[in-house]
Image (cartoon, rainbow, N blue to C red; front, side, top):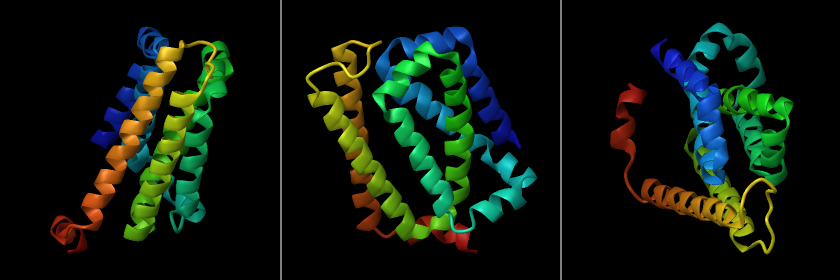
Length: 190
């Protein structure tokens, strides 16, 4: 229950107008901090929703694949430059951002992750790395600004941030695939 309060506190903190204004003023903060922290707030609140709405979630997400697919759809939607622009200009889209990222991306991802198994998780990491690599290429090598509300240097910074995350995910995958992970999962199997 403590995690729920941490997640709700993070969510409410991110919704405060001064914090929201600060994080949305710089493109890298908007994409890599605010949006990702909204997903983290959903990850933290997920056990509460699993406990109180477990039947509905289990009926929808038995294998973990639908929840993971929903996570990727929401993530891809918010990575589009046009949606970032419109979230700054339309309050309805801003509201949708604050609902979709925690509750339609974070909560389903936490519910789905263990259900996927090791192979599914590796595939999820690979898909995430490919998405981040593609977005890095798009933001770094685009000749024109993709977001009307941000400068070209902001766009390139976000692109390099995506490249950094893609490399980190690949390094993590290499580490987990080529090392013995059984010692870290013994307590879960007992």
